Image 1: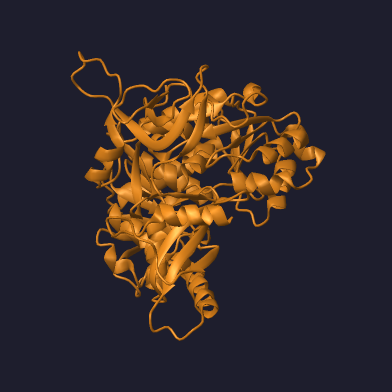
Image 2 (image 1 turned 60 degrees about the vertical axis):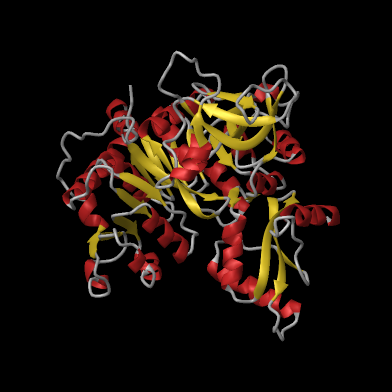
Length: 529
C-alpha cells in the first residue's frame, strides 16, 4: 500500500510504465518518464546537501517541471512549499522566510523580482532556475545558483530514505484572519489518504483524463495531481486566459474530470459546450464556496450526462465532505456528508453534539487532520484541539480540527453551510484576510483608517469593499484618491485581493471597546446592496 506521496508516481510507473501521466500543451510524459525525472531531480537535490525535512519552495507557473519538482522534493526527504505564481514579491518573501526555505525553485524573471527583498530570507542558500544559466545571475546574488537541467540529468540515487508517513510532506499557505498567510503542515499520510479517499468517491479509473486548471498551491488544485497519480490516470496542466479555453481543452483533450470553483462555474455555465466536451466529461466537482443554484441548474441542463459533485474542504484537513450526485435534486444546497475515512461532527462550543437542525461548529477528525500551523503554537492550539467524545480510557488525546465554520445537520446526516465565525472573505475561490488587505491599503499612505469587508456577490462569492477615511490634509478629491488607491493595490496585491470599490466616510463607527465596529459596517453595506 502506498504510504509516501512520491510513491503515487513511482508505483504507478511500476504497474503501467507506458501509460500517459502528465500532459502539457503538446507534450505528454509517460509514468516511466515522469518517474525518471522525479528520481533524478531528487538525487540532484540530495547532492546539494538538502537535509531531511528541510523546506524547498516551488515558485513556478503550472508546467511539467513544477510537478516533477514537487514530488522530487519529497523523494529526497524534503518538504515542498508551493507558492502561488500570482503572489507579489513581498508575499512570496514572507512565505520563504516564515518556513525557513533552504532552496527556491523558480525562473529568472521571478527571482529577479524577489531580489530587493531576499535579504529577509536568511535560511535561503540556493536557487534553482528553470530557464537561465548560472552565469546570468551568479554575480547578482550571494546565493548558490543552480540549473534545473543539471538536477534533471542527475544520475545519483538518493538511497534508502528515512521518511515515514507521519513526516511532513508539504506546507500550504492559506490566508489567516489576523493578517499574513499561515502555513498548514501536511504529512505524507494526510495527502496520500486524501488522494485515496477522493479517488474512491469520484470512482477514478486509469482511463480517466483530468484537467488541472486550479493553482497547485491550492490544496483543492493539488488534489487533481494526487488523485490522478494514485489511480494511474492522466492529468493535463492548464493556465487559462478565458473560460472558453477551458471548454476547448475539455473537448480537445477528451477530459473526463474537471474541478472548479464557483466563479469559474458561473462563467462556464453561460457558454455553449460542444458535443466533444459534453460526451466525454464524466464528472465535475465544486469546492471553495457554494455553487449558486442557478449556475448548478444551468450546468446540469447543459451537461446532462455529467455527474456533479458538490464538495467542502479546508486546508487544515485537505478534504472533508461531498454530496452524492444522486442527492442533488433533493438537496442542491447541501455540502453532503464526510468523505471516506473521515468523520465530521456538529458541536457546541463545549464539544457536546448539536441536535439535528441546530447550528454548530464543524469538527473534522481522522487521518486527514493536518499537523497544525508552521511555527504558530497559539493558532495551532486554537484550531487543533481534542476530538469531541473521546473515551476517557484513552489517555493520549486524539486531535481534531475545529473548522470555525457553522453548519447545520439534518435528520439524515446531511450538512448545510451557514457561515464563518471569523472575518475571512471568500472571493473567487480564495480565502482572503481582511487584515492583509487593510495592510496593503495603509501602505499606500492615502488613508487614515480603512476596513475591508466582504459583500455578497453572485459572480465571485464575495467582493471586497474598502470603507475608508481620507487623511486629514488630503487635497485630492475622494475620486482621485480612490483611483490612486486602487492602482497601487493592483500593483502590490494579487488580483483576487484588489478591492472592487471604496466607500468614503468622515469617521468609522466604534464599539464599546473603542474598536472599529465591523459588524455595523457590514450590516450597513448589506442593507444598501
